[in-house]
Each structure stands twice: as C-alpha cells, then as structure tokens.
Length: 312
Length: 264
Ligand SMILES: Nc1ncnc2c1ncn2[C@@H]1O[C@H](COP(=O)(O)OP(=O)(O)OP(=O)(O)O)[C@@H](O)[C@H]1O
Ligand SMILES: [Mg+2]
Image 1 (cartoon, rainbow over the protein chains, first blue to last red):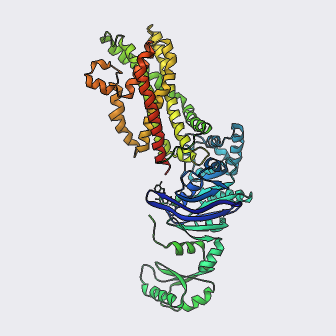
Image 2 (spheres, rainbow over the protein chains, first blue to last red):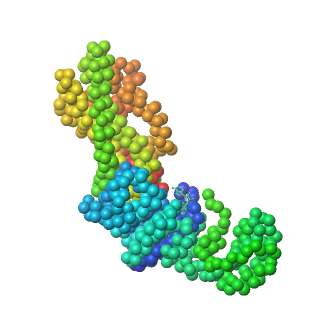
Image 3 (cartoon, rainbow over the protein chains, first blue to last red):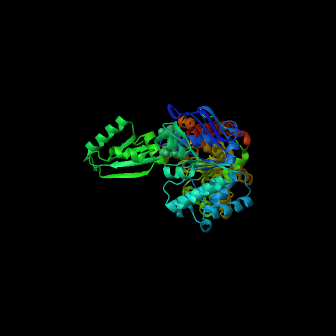
C-alpha cells in the first residue's frame, strides 16, 4: 500500500519445526509510532529481523517502505535505522569512530559522516564522550549511542527493539525524546517494549503478540476502553493466602453478575466503566483490607490477554 | 540450504575496512610477531640446530626452513583470523549482527572475512620476507632469491584464501571458542611439523609421504620453497592445481556453511 511503512500479509516464520511468527498480518501507516508488545518469546525480534530483511520470510508477503523484503533487501536497509535488542557496538573503536565506521556501510563519505556524527552525538548528549572507548560507557550511554548510530543514515523508518530496557529514568526519557523528535519529522517508528507505560505514552497504535500471533491491535486508550473499560478497582484481602475465602467469594460473585475481573495472589482486580457501582456490590464481601481505585492501564489489558504465567 | 546472496564489492570493502581499521589502531603490537618470529626461528633452528646439520634437501638448514616458516605464517595468518577472530566478531562482539542491519548483506560480511584473513596472510608474508632478507643480508648469505621475495606476498593470496575458507568452515560449526583447540591440535599443529617444513618428505616411509601430500601446508611449502630457490615453475603444476581447487572448494563451502549458521 502507498501509505504503509510496513505491510505484512499472512507472514509466517519457522525456525526448523518451530513456528516463531504465525500467519501475522499487519499494517503500519507512515508517520506513526507503532508498538509491538508481547511476553518473552512472542516473536517480536523475529518480526524485526524479517522487517530489516536480514532474516528470510518462510511464508507470506512483507513490504517495507513500499519495497519487497526479498527482492529489495539492500534498498530497504539503506532507508531504515535499527536499534537492536542486544548491544553490538564495536568495542575496538571509540564512540565517534563507531558512528563513522557504521556510516561507511551506508556509503556516506568521511566528511559528511563526521558532520553527521557530531550532530547526533550532540543530540544524544555524548559529545564530550566522543573519544571514549566503548567499554568505559555506562549502559545508558551505550544505549544512547546505539540510538544515534541507528539514525546515521537519516532513516525514514526507525526500528527500536526494547530500547529502554535496563535504563534509569533520565536515560529512558532521553530515548523517548529522540523517538518523539524523530516522529515529529513525519517519519515512522516501530518500537518493542516490555514497559506498558512506555507503550501507552509513545505509541499511536500497537499490537500485542503472544506465541507468534497477534492477539489484538489498535490505539492504546481505545484498546483499554474496549477490552476492559476505563477504570479498575483492586479489592485486597489478607496476604499470603490467609484469606482465600474472601477472594473465592468475590470470584464467585463476579462470575454470577458477569463482571470482568482478574485474580492475583492477594487481590481481585475488577474492571469496568461504572466502577463505583461495581465496587458497591462487593464492598461488604468478606474481610477486605483495602480497596484501590485507579485508571485501567495497558498492563491490565496485557496481563488479561496473555495470562500471568511466566514464559521461558 | 541458505543461498549465497549477491555480493557487493563496495560493501565488502566497507566491512574489510572495518577490520583493517582495528588492525591499524593496534599496529605496533600487530607488526611485532611477523617481524620477530622469523628471526627467532632462523637463529634458533636455522643457525643453532643447523650448525649440527651439514645440509638438508641440498641446501643449508637455515635456507631449508626460511621458505617453510613463510608458508607456515601464511597459514596461521589466515587460519587464526577466520577461526578465533571471526568467532569473536560473530559470537561475542556481534559485529556481524550489527552489520546485518545495514545495506551490507551476510554474504558481504563473509566474503570480507575471507579477504581480510587473506590480507593477514599477505601482510605476514611481506613482513616475514623483509625480516628474512634482512637476516640474510646481515649474515651475508641470501636466504631467499630476490624474485622469490617479490612473489611471496602474491602467492600468499591463494594460500591465504584456502586456509581462510577452511577456517570459516570450522567457524560455521564450532559450538564454542575453545572447540577450535581441537582442529588446531589434531590438524594444524601436526601439519606444522609434518608438511615437509622442518625436514624433507623423502625422509618419511612412502605411506606417510602420501598422507603428507594430501595436506594443504605441504603444497604451500613446496611453492614457497620453489620461489625462494628460484626453481622452475613447471615442477609446481601439481601443487598449484591442488591449491587452486582447494581454494575454490574451501571458500565456497566456508561462506555457504557460515550463511547457514547465521541466516536462519
Ligand atoms: N535463530 C533462532 N533459531 C531458533 N529459534 C529461534 C531463533 N530466534 C528466535 N527463536 C525462537 O523464536 C521465538 C521468538 O523469539 P523472539 O526473539 O522473536 O522473541 P521476542 O518476542 O523478541 O522475545 P523477548 O521479549 O524475550 O526479546 C522464541 O521461542 C525463540 O526461542
Ligand atoms: Mg526480542
């Protein structure tokens, strides 16, 4: 499609017998920030590797910036910037030289690369570290440098695979700023993250994946409203299983009057639009130690969709 | 099986330059071994052990081992780079993975590895030839012919490529960096001693001679020896054919198998 940055049609990826991405169709319009969420092993990085046309597609079609990933892989990579999940800066080079070497792969001449590197280092506030060795950088600085490196070719599409994992709030905000500035130039961002607040803040649209499939897709606020309602209330009982009876009672009643809920160790979370009405139904049920009222979040949607058990 | 994608010379150069840049950054430590090693060998084995040996293969012992250590250094230059160093770039530093997100393709990366490993053979050959010529000048005994000295860096290209291809084949398979010790111990080190390098193959029983004639280093050493003595090229037809075929087969397999490992 003309206005799609990424357009996937029944996309499937197998590693041997294992299906990592299963019949995914996806359309990311140009100019937005699109989030790809999902538990560990959902297939997010696999999706990104297919989009950057470095990992072959098993079945289906994939177009990036209007180009086919099979026939135009080099041209696609020329126009995208990738911030990988794992740090792969070159430890043999200084901060600035990392950018210069990377620029060479895009055919950028030395003088132009030097200018561009200075500009990007300024942008991610690493100018005074330009001559430092990579091993002397903190995790946050490395991450910012990788973000800068991903923009060395002025990409039209920026792909960030968990760009803020392990960062302190300052560094996280600095990465967010780069993403916002980039998007404001009318370009497209594809982002994966495990932080639901981050996705809610940054993404215009997102998809939640699990086990290689897309479960749900849409605007974050609308997704919350449509799937669980705007508000949530946590009914808290005694901890450490001391009052399972109360929780059992509430659970039974939830099912009876058809209230959307989820049970977590010592509490039951209720969801809905008219949350005060719902709370009043349960207020006197057993011995509650606390009732917490809050807005429903993307995390609620995520946990409800993908369940609470850990992934391997 | 993973197909070899089109290879872009410009991208191969960009990747090769990255490796060369790393080498240049630490040039002092990189120059030292290929300059000092031959001097040690020539002193210790050539003149030291050689003092007890009248002649070997028709020449003095020091003249016998000079071309051998050249062949050995061509082998080690490429083989080490395509195994240990390539594995570090692939596995630990994720250099290949970083490049995979740029217009360079996996095939470009692997071809650049081959050429870089070969470059190491050529620089080793050049530096060692210089060192051997200098030693020869000092003791007033030309250890290798001048035209042989000029041809050494050139012959290092096919020899280096052959060993680089073999190295990549191992890299496509190795489960860990320590595993490389096994082929080094079972294959490279025995070859180092037995490929007609420190004594002529004619000293061997016939069956061992036949086995030695299958080893790549044997042919590399036959060629460097002929060049060093200024012998006729015609005597080398078999060795040249051996190295040509091996170079093509090994580099092709090395790239193909590594692609299979990294592009899944
Ligand atoms: N090269 C590979 N060979 C075989 N299986 C793989 C390969 N890469 C990924 N997988 C498997 O595919 C599945 C999806 O992996 P992927 O890395 O895409 O998940 P992810 O959503 O990025 O997870 P995370 O949040 O942990 O980064 C996992 O089960 C993983 O084990
Ligand atoms: Mg991932």
